Length: 127
Length: 369
Image 1 (cartoon, chains in turn orange, cyan):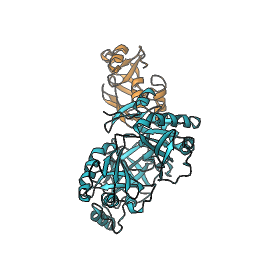
Image 2 (cartoon, each protein chain N blue to C red; image 1 turned 60 degrees about the horizontal axis):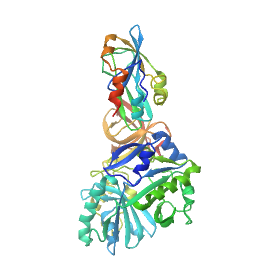
Image 3 (tube, helix red, strand yellow; image 1 turned 135 degrees about the vertical axis):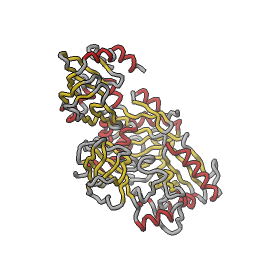
Image 4 (tube, chains in turn blue, cyan; image 1 turned 30 degrees about the horizontal axis):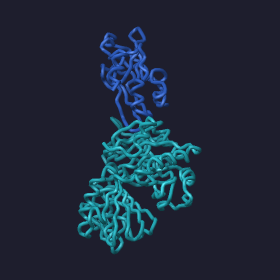
């Protein structure tokens, strides 16, 4: 399982990358995509909204399941990746790259300190 | 949790495994979409050993099965298979099943894995009035029989390599007991749950290894792949085939479920709940199971509500998915009388929105939107 060390993680299997200047990119982890199987639908309709940490920012659907995606940190959703809605299987292929979900302007970047490190995330995903 | 004789192969092949109806079953191998397309275009193999098998034998067998199932068993001939259901005594459905006629006094009933115990108890209970005894005229062989479904347009061609008996020309819904792949006898049945053509092969557990290996060897040149329960569900749903526990259950009638075609009100067939279903057929049911395809983007799921254009609730989704073939949401659900005309626009409540869909006939992945 791929768990890049430069990202922070949530127990709900989102990753967040600190891009500097209060900006961050958010997606779902390699573990999440592998557990979901073929991802066939992504819906994110929160662009422009300011959401609190752990609020739902979108929905991801595999053939058999529907899952919510949660904000790893509070902030405004300033961009949604159009590719993931047009071509959801890109999330299976490249969850940390082309399959990113949203860009967020964080209201409190210090919240990142409370998230899981790559090592901690690896621990919770090792059954 | 039980294993089938093939469980070890699924694990070896790296399938994602999950408990299903008490069995450790493969959900997917290469991915549901890939497996689905493989079956529609080539051929794939499903382990369906979890299905139940019950033998009914003796001079009372025909009368008994006429009483406990809805289809006309008298229309069967040796080597013919029939889709049917067991009505319960309240006008609902105990299970749906296949009835195989081996000869006039020997029948095989193939039932759903999740219902084996319920069905067996029901069969034994109802068998009492016919003097049928469990272990004698009634026999639950579910734990002794392994089964593979080889489905897809190339399935029969590939399987022909494994037997000298002609199987490629077999009629749909027929079967033969034949020597196959070095096994003395299998039941080779041109049935399936995918709408893609092919067969289902039943053998004794001890012959299962031989069957598995031979099937994959014979299919290799055609691109055969193992297929999990995930794709089994999407394949059956594209065809509008009912799944027990979702589209039909103890409270739905065959008439409501669009299974009037397996419900025969012929003379000399006094099946359980016949009066209730006959009345319903004559008067028209209050709700009907219909298929639909999404016009708006979205995936219907079981229990989502169905609305009319004015926002009134008119039904509930029983099965739904993204069609791997058409890449559209498809589903089935019960819709109230007056709202279920073909082509009618309906709305599916998906999260906080009501998304437009259209009632269509199966196969849903071929429906024009």
